[in-house]
Image (tube, rainbow, N blue to C red; front, top):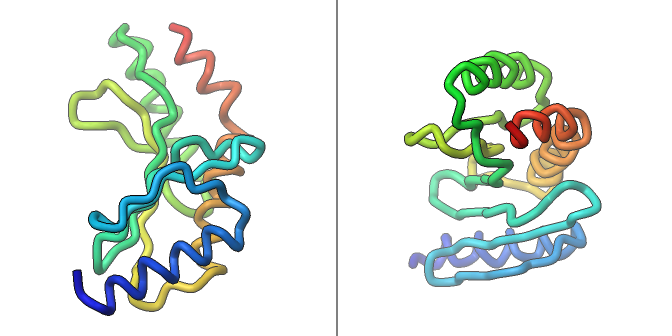
Amino acid sequence: MTETTSDKFVQIKDILLEMDLKIVKEDERNEAFVVENEEDGIKNLVIDCAPPLLILEQLIMRLPSDKEKRNELYKRLLQMNQTLVHGAFAIDDEEKHLFFRDTLQIENLDANELQASINALSLAMAEHSAELLKYAKQ
């Protein structure tokens, strides 16, 4: 771990604490955090310092097993992505899980930028969680 990277890890931790996010897990060696603020829809949000990027990823749900319903959901996710300020809904390679994911440049990262990304996740969950839950139950 380089000194610069370590400094960024500490800086990001300070920002997360200032944002009143609960740090559920901290892995200094791998430079990653798991944070939450359930009131704002943030649950087990992984924040990974992977220079030159800061990666934010939260598991949203398991995808429907029915292929037709899954394809319908994919179309809706693309439409939902159009409305997001930061980040996007994404699926894993096995098409089993839906995530919210955002990446930021770590070099010039500031508190406002990280706050905006996390707020975008909160807003996305507020706007779309009811609809996503319908797909999760299928």
